[in-house]
Image (cartoon, rainbow, N blue to C red):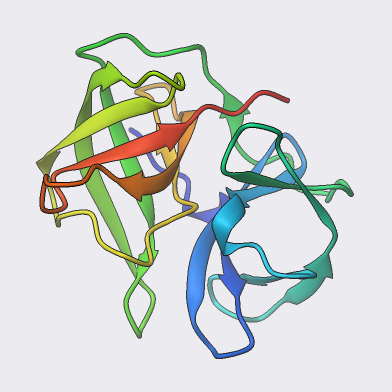
Length: 163
């Protein structure tokens, strides 16, 4: 219903740590704070890789590749409303295992970021930045960028994507 694993990518760092990235309308998207120079990207099965130049979105914690890639990837969804069900998916941990976290939109902060609350699945953890948040139509509504302080991995902020 929600997923499309083939659009998920890994952002690889020189120290062999990973964050998440994904394809949206032929562009690679990740959280801005995980982007290195250049952005090193691998497919999840690590059979393909490449380096991409990127631009940090003004006023947002997003990195967007400058060059288009052949795969169309996800489509962009409309702005969510409080109570909407979403899913965050990606890869995590040393083995980069696939995960899905079911969540609900619980609010918006002063900067316009979406706040979501975990409903089912593992708690949100470090290393999950850059994951797409998908609505029930498998469309991207945001990018996971950071946890809400004091919620012990139960709530996170999503940046909205404007391209």
